[in-house]
Amino acid sequence: MARAGRGTPPLVQPGAPDAVLRRLQLAVHGRLDGLLQGDHVGLVPGHGTEPGETRPYMVGDDVRRIDWAVTARTASTHVRETIADRELEVTLVVDQSASLEFGSARTTKRELAVAAAAAVGLLTARNGNRIGAMVVGGPAGVRRVPPRSGRDALLALLHGLVAAPPSEGGGPTDLEGALWGALRAARRRGLVTVVSDFLAPAGWERPLRALAARHDALAVEVVDPIELALPEVGQLHLLDPETGASLDVPTHSAELRRRYAEAAAAQRAGIATALRRAGATHVRLRTDRDWLVDLARAVEQRRRRVGGPAGRGPA
Image (cartoon, rainbow, N blue to C red):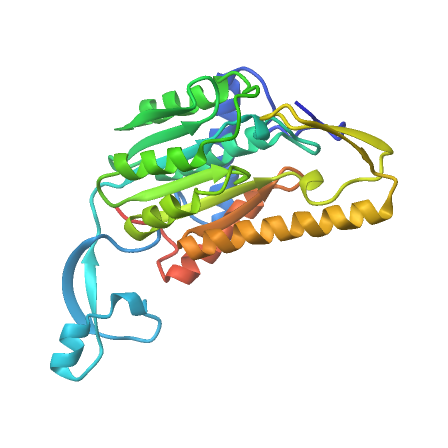
């Protein structure tokens, strides 16, 4: 596990699982709610899935809710309201593979991924909502946690993520398999959140597209600054934690650093394009930034784009 000497913020620093969870709960229900200017702010600002009554279209309505049959019959644009579901099913797809056991700034990518998963879980665990997970990495490869309701069930799920031993080797991340598993497991429409660095082999785009067609999909990408630009630190020995391949990199070369930055930018742009084409809302969190501020900003932008209220989400 790589880590720079700049210090680790108290929100995701390592420690006993129970202590880590307490810090995350305080951060999400205290500081994050404050940043979003509301108590128990929901991540799903839209409407339910059951069809309701139609009404005339108003400026600002989501055009995807236009009822074309009624519009054609009345010669006036109408939208169909939906009835909010009483319960929401949330599926977390959390990457805990070896590539996340790295961090050069405030925290590791794995700790940041756990924090992001905890934020989604804590913001949606109310009113009987059911939360389950597909966990990628470790000896089990892909592990399913069946959805359950209640705060104790959520804390047990998060405790398992925090307490899981570090992943070492094991080959490439099977993110594609985890997403197909989530598609099979999530029978009713709900929220699917994928937390990963998306450095897995190609193939995960198709199941993510299928998930986004059926569910509200949120993709949280975790990134470390060294993955975007190499620092000038002389001869640098790099080791791929998933394959074991190693490489010595002469970072004193300005040309090499330039080509690395260009290749990294192209890689991340490709990931962003794939997520956008799949229909998922894309949130990028970095290990050298305040993840709470970035997450709050992304949630607010998502609300404005979807056109939902600034309140509590579906009841």
